[in-house]
Length: 162
Image (tube, rainbow, N blue to C red; front, side, top):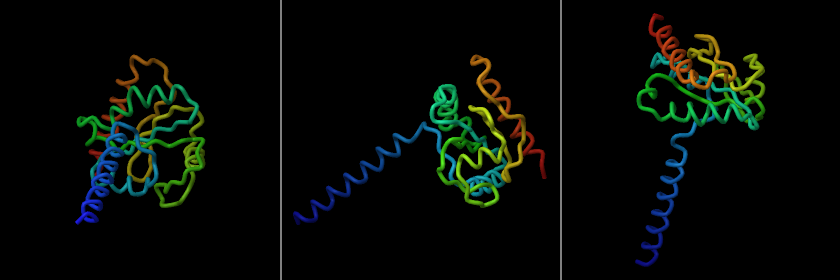
């Protein structure tokens, strides 16, 4: 009986830790790891894949992530409008690209010809660009509006396709 109580107690602790980790992760932008799978979801749902290209020591990237993108990733109004992932231009972290090739975040960034971060790219399910990238941070006061406009334009393009 004591062994059973000990086991139940351990299981409850593990469940609590899992819930705590999941709660901590909510509201944070997810790193890209499988763009092919994300692309398939994009095709099914007719919503864009939105890629946020960043680097570790980029203060403007932190600003865009904290002020705009973390919010978008949990806002119910946007959860059905986009599939948002972060790609680190200075990372060797592996990722499966749109064509199912294993590549590092850095190599994928180079392949996409991203030279300046932060950059936000809007693509369809196969990685084709839908609208012009948002590059850098020019006017912070209008950044959210530019972002929402690009999301809506991307959605409209995808919905008009057969």
